Image 1 (cartoon, helix red, strand yellow):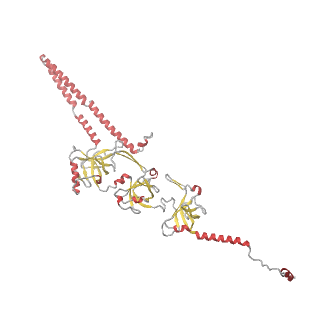
Image 2 (cartoon, rainbow, N blue to C red):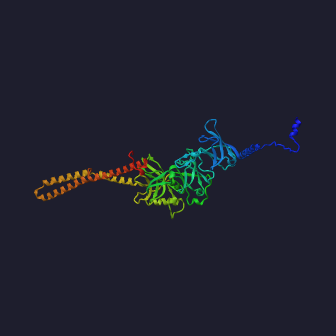
Image 3 (cartoon, helix red, strand yellow):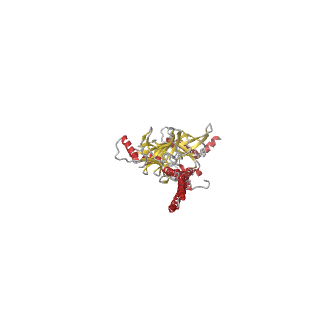
Length: 532
């Protein structure tokens, strides 16, 4: 039965067909497997190292979503965000791609890009729509690194910006901070990288970055100064207002300049150290290195004289006041104010001078012999500011230069206002000391005796008596006029006293105005408010 069936199935004359064991349906899974393998291989071949980045907070960071970028090119993705064991910060575990691997070194920086607002800068606004991401700034180091500490603020200068870093030292820095601009002749040429307080004795250390090609203008003799805010100077030339820029007013700033002599030297090297001066005036003064100091003693008040007040000769500034203090001489019972004046010798042109220190001494002695004296003068009646003037006074009492333990002592004369006040006071004192009342009373007694004598004379002398009486009356009138004009209650004396009082009131009003301007300097621009 089975054989018949087999014969029927394999009848003679019919071809034998073998069925294939491979079905077309297996092609799709194989292709999918190959594609998956290729994708896996590509992913593994492009995968870079895993890095950990520590941040203070995880604001804006999401595992599997937050990307790590450089110049808007994705270099990695955040895989996990875990807190540290002490819960004080977070650790971001990120998978970097192969392109980022060569740039992960000790100088690589990471920070979170999010919206940031300040007085002078708006950044990260695009993240309001796209969300926060981590920016990577590749470093130029040589040793590989996989653990990093993220920055809380973006770096001021990126690694791809060319320039030079310098170090500035100062006792105080005002409003200068990280990101403050650096100016060269009014042009912004750099930024402040950081500012650190080194202690009471050392002060502050400020790191600044100057872009190329402006760093070529920084030499060893370059002066840096604080250009923050508004500078208002009330000197002998009136009010002088200086503003570096609106940005410097808002965020602080530093400016620098280089003299012609300093530009002849080679540019300063990386991390060269410079002093940071308080303002442009101090920086310019620092350029004068050949200096000499003299001592001047003034009697009376020196209110209005400050450290830094100018020292002038015939209206030309040749130096400044560097120190002054009060000295009481117990032996002589005198009170003086010695003032130390520093003279910039480079500002004084001297011709036909004998060589050596002896020649300098003879020059000073000769000027003093001709009447050169130091005097306090008022540079502004509005502010009451004083300055030291060296001028010639031919009628001044003879004096000599005295060599003290510190500096040569140059003779002085009283201040202008002090001399005027003394002159008026002395005149009034002399008038008050005259015995005008006694003189008038004695003259009256003499005239009365003469009148009595003439009354007792005989009638033959009547014409003479009449003449004497008229003379007596005239003399009495003259004495009364002298008494009324120059006596204790005279009009002249009253007018002189009134003039003195007005002068004192004027000085007192000027001093009051000076004190008010010191407390409210902004009133010069905005005026006096109702509350003041």
